[in-house]
Length: 411
Image (cartoon, rainbow, N blue to C red; front, side, top):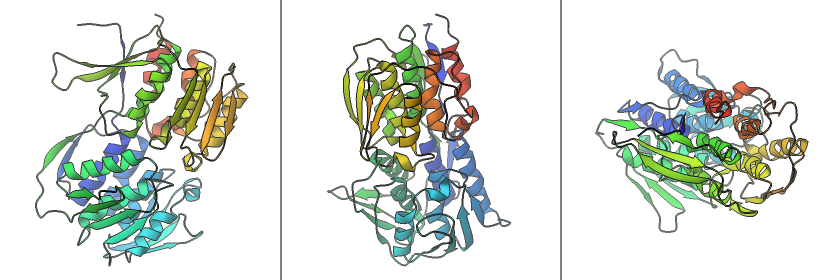
């Protein structure tokens, strides 16, 4: 049955793609990954993993501004024979790595910071870990935990990993565990949820094809568009409401702003699942939302709340200053330039009702999520310009092409 929905093609999940790439490297390409993410970060990780495999490797691994790539590669290089240097651009070398470095040292692995302790660049001498038991502080990033769990199958006795605090973005740790299990690796969690046990890789793994979910982080920007154009119905192809991705919290937040999500299935395809979204429903005027499990959505939520002229208290935002940009500062700066009212503390961001106005241009701070979070405001201010629009390549190379399908719709 044909509809008038605007059909949006979302990229595959970058988080899931990168985890499967790591597992495929560790298992000797046992899995066939169908239609992985085309994001800049995934292309970078694929290239660097190929560099590790190559006998002619330069042993210098440059991660640009990709924090997840650097954090996934550091433990892998630590158990890979050879002398390695891991580094990145200026911003990446300002992002915290100390908890991961300390955890690797606990395991008897040799990681040395060459400039400032706790930060890239690092020199790594690949060796065999002497301890399987490790503790790690996950407050600044869940990637510290995921990166260690991912190398566990290659460790002689697996790993016993205990988190010293409640983690940020816990759903992404659970995603890592789910993917390891799908790959045939035994994973258990303690009753208190603080310790993970991952076993050494079985002698034989069954080869299989792996399908990657569509990306909820990328979907979030189209929810803001649905909010601003309630007369439109937007079909997010291949997306599903039941997901292991932490950023599926998008649905819950935008429901408070009156955007409804309806999952639909194609009668012609067994896997033809999609979500249709539409704004115009009842909108809460005072929203409180804990973003500790989905910090990458804070820019989207903040801009959407400002556009909807509601008060929104976003909690659990303590680590967003440590992303590709200082997102706390970036969001506050740009919304205030547009006439928005924002207050920030270490633990929360509050958006107050206000009347936004266009500015020229919106600064993106070389951060893909800032660019895409503010882009939907072009639906309200058609002449609004986004500085450095190409920065979206990091996670969603086709963003502007898909965005224009909504922007140019004259319904």
